[in-house]
Amino acid sequence: MGTITDDPAALARFSTDASHLVGTPAAAVAPRDREDVQHLMGWARRWKVPLVGRGGGSSLDGESVPPPDGVVVDFSGWTSILEIDDADRLVRVGPGLVNRELHRALQSHGLFFPPNPGSWTMSTLGGNTATNASGPRSLRYGSTRSWVRGLDVVLGTGEFLQVGHRTRKASTGPDLLGFFVGSEGTLGLFTEITLALAPAPERRVGLVLGVPDDLSFRATLPRLLAPPAPAFSAIEYLDRSTAAALSRFAAGRLPGDTGLVLLELETTSADEDRDLERAAERLAAAGFAGDPVVFPDADQLWTLRGQSGDAIEQEGVRIHEDIAVPWSRLDELIAGTKEIGTRHGVTTRLFGHLGDGNLHPGFVLDPLSERATTVRRELLLLTKRLGGTISAEHGVGAVKAPYLALEHGEVGVSLLEAFKRRCDPDGILNPGKLYPGPEAAPGRGSS
Image 1 (cartoon, helix red, strand yellow):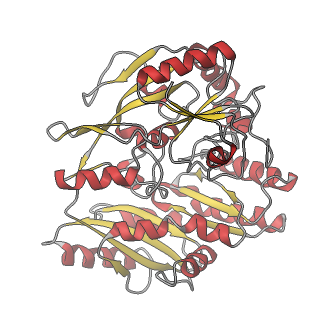
Image 2 (cartoon, rainbow, N blue to C red):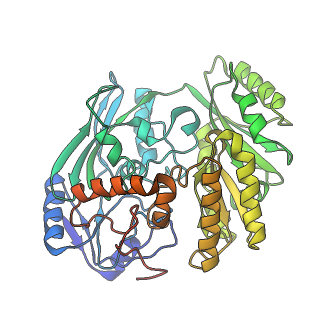
């Protein structure tokens, strides 16, 4: 089955992820190959032992926290790049390869994998696929789902399945691949991932501007992105208090006295000056004042922006949410989120991917308290009333499993559960995650 660890000290790092949940794994197994995974699956079925796949442990909703006496399947060593196909712009990787490491490996090929979650320095491609992660560049390039071409999967039955195509399109019935992207390890364990790639822009420049307090995003975003728009691939937002926290956390590398927008502009060396001038003109016309702070390498800006969650958590935020609404409802979402915090006497922080309506509200609140449950539910209900989604890129995990019917309705949830039963009839794969039901979720602080 691979290398097995049951030493309590060694297991401590597998008991948590980036959420507030804590589990108690009975053991951790590091399989060496697909045959090991199939053997492990057969053993787990025989003894009804829960299995939880794990990569970098960056999940914010508890996707990789094990239930009591569960076994963690550690894929962090599966970091191989099996193939880079320059002609078809494809790459085959092991599920444990870290997102940023793939980015670095592709630079000499003039290609890149567009999704860049804030945790890209530690999150793995298996985890990105399992949660349909995205990040700042989702404005232009979409989420991970748009870039997964194929998966090798060991189902909960122990059966091996290959889904997807190397072609750009296929019309052979419902999309089986789509069932597995975002499935959070509840249907099967990925042993290989085929990803599509994009030509890397010659230059990516980061821009940072202050946000006037009275700016309406409903009016601003259409003006900012109306054709012929500058080649913005990301537009991020930090409210005033989040910007201040990040400025303190990052030793003043960003302004901390106002709300901020962070943008990425794709350009070339020859066109950079002209494109920056056009971008500044468009930003001014959209209502932003002042000259932008320029980061010649936008990746430095995104690495800095990726510390936002740590910055606000250091200052007390314990609930990190992930919601999205249409552009036209962003102002209502921001106002409504602040109203919820004020009404419950809770400090609120707001940041996220403004370009695609995806915000990450944070609340200074004990996540295990009854008030936290009330605040989260009110926020999710507000989001649905505004035509949004309860999870845009972090997944569902254990934290949001009770709210899945808000998103899909009872009929939709029953269809998902039927597919789950076919793939995992014994319910051993990541129980308590994604699907509401009787399975035990990780404990409230311990288990």
